[in-house]
Image (cartoon, rainbow, N blue to C red; front, side):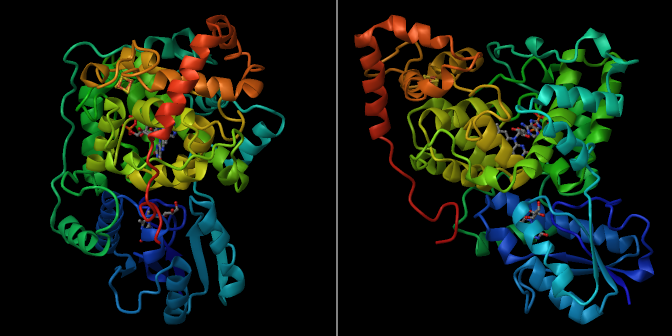
Length: 517
Ligand code: FAD
Ligand code: DLZ
Ligand code: SF4
């Protein structure tokens, strides 16, 4: 009897732990397009196309290499609709002696997979996903003795562990972190070389048709679908990043320009997260660009930190903090998500452009996710469950393990500061400095209250005032309350009333956008 190896849509890696070292005549690989995965939230259409198309290409590659692959298409007769259902069918069909599967990235699935050993009459091995650089045990031990978890210290350990940008036991160039050089506002006319775009081939076109038909009520447009769907395409995308954009990656990391959807970002998250690119290899290529004199240290260190720092850190934080992270709401935020998050119909130019890019590309860059969309959600007191659903739906790179820590802990401070040392709250001034949005906006960032004032301004103080008890004690933010106190009663009331008046104009989203009715 063979070993059954289920491979999930974000496990499209040739040397995945479950197939590494296996022999081909002794293995049946099972890949499944299932309704439950495609709809547990109503993913952006591009995300479903990306995953189904990449899965189909990957299955072909495996077959070409001589593996036996049972590939179940969404429309296959008797498709059971779930991983567990399809594995049950395959167990019936092949009578395997064992099931070897790499752990899933999401908690809800781990709970299902943990039942398999009782459910199926064969051995079940759930293997660690070793495409990550850290291990869970490493993180859990590190986290155990700390009250607050700070990425920076974890990151330094990852630098030591990988040897990336190390000069003996010291950080290359003398500093661990060069972020202070990475906050350049965009200069007039800033634009980046266009990244490679991949025209949909026959396989992708077939999937596009399927998604248009079966998921027509999901958010997002398919018109601009140009994501890499194979390892070769992803490599080409990475080559272009290292040749043309990494040099400016650092300085303009936080810059935003209306209509410039990629700027100098790598745009590689969709490929990394489904396994087409290896995160460590990308970091090694970045380091090489620095050693070869092709990119400055602040760009290269910044890129490496996003991957072996943030990406690893949120992966481990998720598994360390689940399941309660999903329920966390330390600031007791209760407002429903406004409808404009789905329609993009708002006069706030920064939000409108970020949502447009989200709809057209299933992507927005980090600072749009953090300081525009996230900042608004924080200041307006949007409830974490709605915001989590939104982020999980709309981005092609979204999986709960990476989305949830970024949303609940990083932008909403819902975990009460375990991950971030302070809430990422900012007024219109910050967005004005880092973007060209405000010049095309109905509102003015210079106007603080009343008609025409940038809504971020009063919302900022409304947020601070309503969470004063908690935030005043925070060393990194407490000081701003002396500014607030010096304003005097009248000015304070102006701010609070302007914010209240704005919040009243928000129309809550109708049901059915994020989850099936
Ligand atoms: P680059 O700017 O080129 O960065 C390089 C790589 O670093 C990325 O590809 C990514 O793998 C990694 N990275 C950077 N920042 C983070 C981070 N904060 N957490 C984890 N990895 C990071 N990223 C996702 O992959 N999936 C998500 O669902 C997701 N949700 C987010 C939600 C919020 C509220 C915020 C603030 C950030 C979120 N991110 C998420 C992180 C980040 O915004 C994206 O990884 C990035 O925009 C992807 O574009 P890029 O590949 O061009 O990134
Ligand atoms: C996101 C997704 C979607 C939309 N569909 C499938 C699918 O039909 N089959 C599959 O194997 N994987 C899919 N995925 C990715 C899974 O949701 C992902 O593997 C888990 O969330 C674990 O991270
Ligand atoms: Fe955004 Fe305010 Fe600037 Fe308008 S004025 S673009 S709302 S920051």
